[in-house]
Length: 177
Image 1 (cartoon, rainbow, N blue to C red):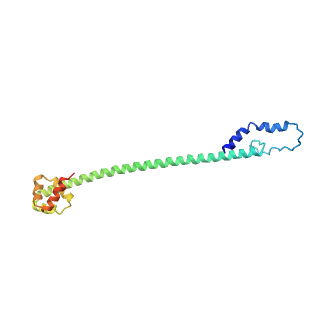
Image 2: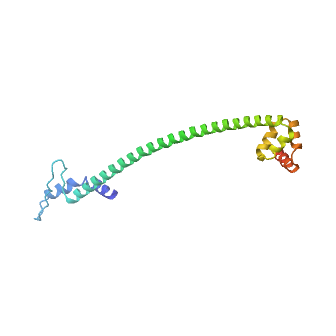
């Protein structure tokens, strides 16, 4: 296509010489010269079929380029729209993540408060009854309860527990974070 454009650009200045130069020569040749094709109104005059073909090819290429530009512009608009949608979704996700984080902090605070309340209750119970109940609880919960108690109350409860269970809880208590 570039070759056609270059050929057209280089041949364009030569066209008047070619067309008019052949008419001005009075040679002995009596060859029949091709008449320019009849042009419809609004079209530039053509002196050869090749010029018409080149011009038509250029027009077709121009139309194709204009179509591609329009398609690119439409795609850019669509990409911008999609980008804004993605940004909105990301903002919504971030907002939701912050809400969840806040809810988790509230949940942890409520759990800590419940553990403090439970540890106060177990500390007020008799050590042998508290030891029986705490020894049946989940290790993590039992360690949390003992950690929230005063040292003296926790020691009395551990003293009334099974030796193996008390050793497990003490080991877990020592690695408490």
